[in-house]
Image (cartoon, rainbow, N blue to C red; front, side, top):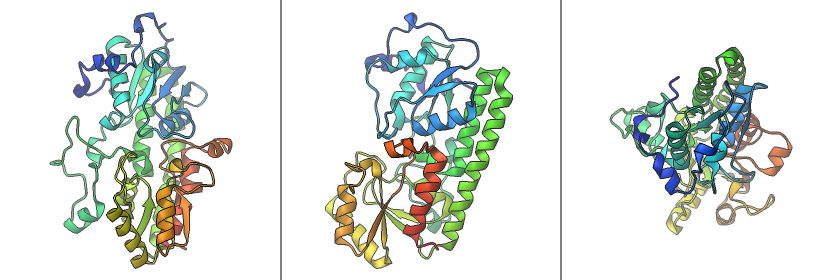
Length: 338
């Protein structure tokens, strides 16, 4: 895997300093040969990198427990901390602009840090912002038209990690990047990635089974629209009154449309994002409103798999456990699968 960034970010290293993330990299001690320590941009990438690196290296996740990686911005001189390690695993997408800036600074000023883009080579697999899988099915499109905005700086839905099939490609990129940075441990990275890929393939099997068994092909999420890749992969509709961004707020008309859909489809279980809750036992306001005003009778949490909560961390749940213990059961209920 090529560890240098795509040309879109060449020359952008100064942006990080302007944003307050860059420290004095000349004063940062250079790392050791190989990979012993590193940073991954958010929880899921950290979990995957830990799985691939095993006992060889120890990585840190800068995003605190209770926060999602998508929409999070660092404070202070995080790039200085990253530069004191051996590797940085990140997604090269404008929706994680701080990681793009950090990677550009590291490559320009500190080339001993291995900069590993998990999306390397996957540009044609990325879905556009507000992509509609149902429209693609109607038009006979596969959703990955090369004439679409697959260009440098394109506006993509960043939630690629929720797809357990594409997740296997991201894990392979992590393994390839670590192997290039640390050839002596390449076999370990490859073997660990292969074992973890088997676990991801099992999640894919579980989703295919539940969709095959489902009595309806539409689910409702009272949260930001972070599951389009699952819709695209498995052929169901996930409706949300909110957009792709965590900062989006639904209009009254969009909420009313969602309530009408629930009643028309006979949906009993509404999904919600627990990261938007004010407490462990509290429903987010949007979910509570929809549940109160519709004929739905239940609400279940579903994880956007971009962070972790304290109770999940206490259970030592990683990405696989979040998908199997939270998301698969939630979508089973929402779609009416037996």
